Image 1 (tube, rainbow, N blue to C red):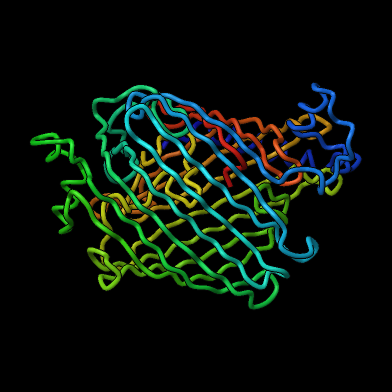
Image 2 (cartoon, rainbow, N blue to C red):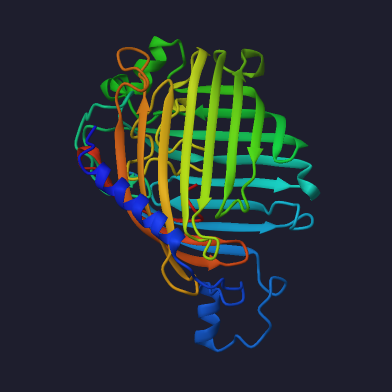
Length: 420
């Protein structure tokens, strides 16, 4: 792992963060805060109505277009929205996100995710539904070994094919629903069900190409069908959540501990027990300008017993929002167990909060179940980005990040809402 540049960036983040806390700025009201829609109305001179939360839409729509040799030309739409189902003073803002895309190479996907709170936060419902056909770029198991030099990526997908990287094309269906009950202030307990299915894996490949794939090798070694499998189970959850907002928190803690038990009785190929842990901590560094935030993210997925299908193994970009691991390709590193850690400094740039910035640094490690153990070998990333306020009432941002990492990895990441 190359740490030579990391101490300088870390020092810069901490100095800037603590300096922000010492500055005094007047608190802007939400009316004085400007988002993209305010700018458009000002240009079109249609901003004569009363700009309040009741007159402002809670929906944010972002079209997307991209290209890569593997995916072809891609067209997509990202829709984000939210609503309060109770008094905002005691009820967390509920959100949903929808993402649909199609590509010229015959790939497509549709997903819907929600995180909803009932009045007084008595109940919390979290769920996700995804279906599609896609390609996974496969680099094998474990961290700390290069395999090959990385190329430039856009949103986790490389803009050039690497002949040393396996492509796995497959259909997938992924469903989960978790229900939490509030036990006392900010603390919840719950249960859930999860279904992960992968079918028609590499059906277009024949002979040597198929036999060479990591999926085929791993599946044979662990007694899985190489062309399709299921991993279905039950979830047992404990959660602590004191964040002031789910889209862009200024303060608070989110901690989630999940025990996942895959069972053959539910359709899984093999049984497995996993422990999933997640911690997000946000420090607002200025009482008069709360957008100065130091954010910390820890995500871990540990196999305690049994085995997992190859495409179910945790790794880069396999968190719930699939955004961890900038600047690397999605799935660049994976393992039977995996750990990811990131720190981010967020700060306003313009006085009206329309434009803000971030700087980040992260590390990740994974085991391969054989000679590479968890926490033994690491890979790191770092970068900076800009935020354009898209909807001030839902704290939605358009995020544009550039990152660099090991083995020549670099990339641009564009999305709606914060990475974590």
